[in-house]
Length: 613
Image 1 (tube, helix red, strand yellow):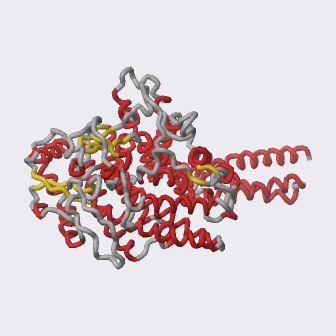
Image 2: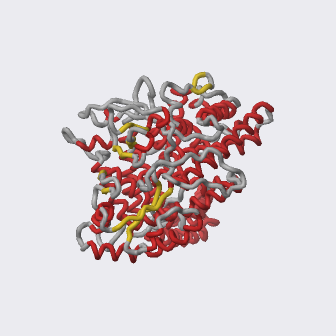
Image 3: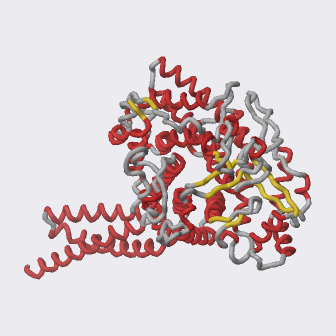
């Protein structure tokens, strides 16, 4: 199934508007509002394409396209849509604000008790989580960009007043989310002889070398990164002093929430209220690290920089987050590719060290960080080619591109999903866990990102074909009728032998929306240039130019009106082919062939005419 970003995004917008809006007002529903994560995901299904895809712009009503207006007719008319979105976003900001007027980042019903017999307390549903911080960064940046452009296109006093209030609330929330991300980053140092140390050595050594040899390799490979972390102690990174000992192992990344004893951030021009005490253990999670990386990269996007969306405090926080963003990518990318032969990441499924879990989902999250690092390094070498093979294997093992067998345990990847205990959550009451059900959507997102990065024709072709298969799998999982029709997720549609129920998931819907926006960016790129075709195209054009010049010598003596038009057409096509030969050699090749055929036809006609004379 070919990915058609415009058509499919309009389908999602139409379904989301039908489900969520009534006469321009957002209908929150029974479960929405209990989780700032779900609410942010829901709003991003509309706002993310509207701020990232020019054809979907809503902040300049005079330029809004007709098919977009038809898809969003439940949201309002051309002039009503922007003010209605401002109202909805303002409601979100108010809903997720605490009694002290500070933003809240509740995980809500996304939290689950480890023991099904226990129930969450209200205080536990209000706990902050990295998903909420990251989603808020993306939502706030999209909102600020939307407001900045729309402000220039409206003069209504009541709208401009609401716009100013929303901008202020959004800036406060953005700063708070960035501060929370800073306080959730952690470096975990542990002894090689500890249980976690032995598991890390087993994962990266793959039982092919002695523990001592693996430890020595780790020490050498991570010496520069260790030095960077030690140097960063003065820049707010909290880490045990034992990291200076090269016999110690370490991991870095994001915990599930603000870590216990994390200091508050005070060195800002405007104080940030509501920095709650953390309870999360100093244990980096690969999953939450990926979530944080996805949000943080939006702080450095071209749109954010061009529109100047960050104030001075936010720029300072962004630089601090960028340091942690780079440290995490470098660390996990190096862990994934550790050694000189088979990568640890190629040894599926991945085993987590701190939680002692293993799953293809964790392989995908480590691969996602590797993709982040490949993009950062603009790597188009062997690393990318090997990552393509990993994605193909994950798609197969996750039954995205292969058939599910009877009583297949793999279906648990998709429903009920992979669960992770949240270390330290017991400090709030009953121990909590987090469940991930978006394996297929995350896989598609990384495939598209790799395809956009690849400059190898074979690798990109494999990725595009794999992406189309993954997209077809996901598209078939849309809910067909009733609550959430046209949205996700109905896993039973593709896993008919499994006893699954359908459930509206804003998490999966939002990720598929991200995938389609990324696919649009992929198609906006120039196609990969083939050096071989470029050389052949130049040879064809050389011969065509020579023959065209020869025909021009004869044109004045034998040309009639039709011949003159044919010669002008040939000249235009040759000029067009010359313009394209460097960037699109295959197109230049295709243009040159019929020109040669037509020149041969003209030459034959001229020869036949000469014989008749």
